[in-house]
Length: 245
Image (cartoon, rainbow, N blue to C red; front, top):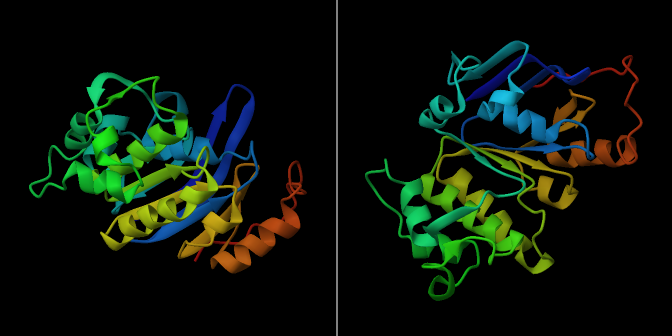
């Protein structure tokens, strides 16, 4: 589904991604663990194709096609979507309109109310509200997840979907991610919470722009706990990088 080969991204004088390698299988949940500042969001933006996060070298293969030269819109048309760490605001558009817009190219539509229920929002309260500053960050994040459910992408990149979400909503967020995979979407789940990373099929640890280890979540979270909190690998180029499967 997705294969990153020696991705390097430099901004200013800083090498944020350093010959990074990563693979994501079809309908796989692949969690990316890392402390703040290790390049997790940069990786998400580079895969999505944000212009200010254009890679300097390497390949981004999506279903066998190198998409590194494609822009964000072109990648979205291929079925890639991004759930932002800080969801964007859409002044003048209702939740209903937003959820219908997310699936405008789908022949088989999912009812917006169904998507809202899945993320734990009452359709009567939210369906016809505008997506503006009256919504909390947590509410906007849930609405964004509902839109991704409606969209049914081939690849969903979720940048810390559990941030700004109360503990009681944690299980609902996990259920949304599992539903995406059950519906055939591959999911890159970016997080620094071990409990969230544990729902993945495979996990990877990202540190100083490199993938240090890829394995089953139990092994990766143990590695993350023992070596990355606090991080012991920054500025240590001699560390052995474990190859992906």
